Image (cartoon, rainbow, N blue to C red; front, top):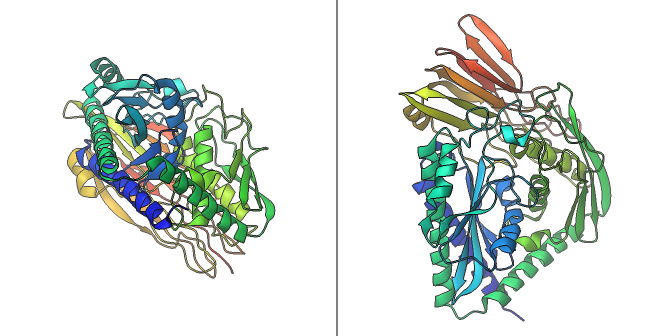
Length: 517
């Protein structure tokens, strides 16, 4: 029998390496989106591309990164070299991406010529080309409009930057200096991870493959034990996206959850078909949302790795919104559709066990781009909102919820780098639902524009409110509007438009649902 203390020591060592990779990525990055908002994730896989450790970061990244490790391993297993890094962002199912701004880098870790581990990171780049600044257009209808697609290719070859690939990428983006700096930061993060893993292996006499298998088995067993404590049952829940950005019609997502003898399944059969607009969620996103909810159930005491998900089954027929074809527009799925999938899954599970009301259900994406000091710029932000209340406590005010876990962009950093002025950043009082326990309140963020710009908004819960639980009321819907002189113009949840110097963009984010009367 393997000593459980030794397994825990290995787990903590690997997690600390992933956390250190995250610190390096943040501190060496160039853009405010990564440096300030921390919109990135780092993970470690074993030599079979099984997730074995991760840093605590963005759930939508971490749950989907396993989808990139396997195809890259299959393609490069026999031709990988020390110092290589593979880059990919394509959302095609066989490449495992999500939406195009999320660019992943993956590197091998060799010991005595043998592949031992794989290190990976994923970062949201503030622009990757496409039809609008920030690469999250509100009205895209195919992935080709959303930016540059990168299949798995070497961006570093034995430690040397592949200038042909780098120049190809930089030629297709609006902010090449930022992209170069952020990509190099990602490689620095991987290099740190490679060196730390080599140090770990060389300084310990453990059988790492046996211990790694034991760690995965431990998480599998612990997850099954927790699921076995839950009542067996099956329940279905339906919720809707406000629209797909092209039509005003709501878009249905339905999930049937079944808990049975230490396993859990999520069946999305009956959800809306693939949409014309950009809300289509690649299977990696849908799976990541389900994995996230499983982790809510199991908690922090169970190490996060592939073993956690061996008892999890996701059913999403091809051609649906939750598993589209390779040409579908996907730009808002990573943020908005993933948030609604979580709401639907939690709503279904909440019929079987005690679960909270809906949180704000959106990441409130704001993208601003234009010219400043004779140079193109792009801003990308997500804004927090209200968390749903539970049977034991009120929802938290003004916080990023569920699939996002980014930090706040400091006003000083934003104003120093870009032609905007934040004239209000406050809690949106009384926007949470009312009940025995109130839902959390949302946020008000108002931007004064100091240049003519193009703005894209990708937001949800502007029509359909975050639902309450056990007769608690729903949270207030969000509001997007712009003040232009004496005029106040209401904006759609998904919209791209030109704005002028002096205009004031106002975002009111949704509150969370309440719990109980």
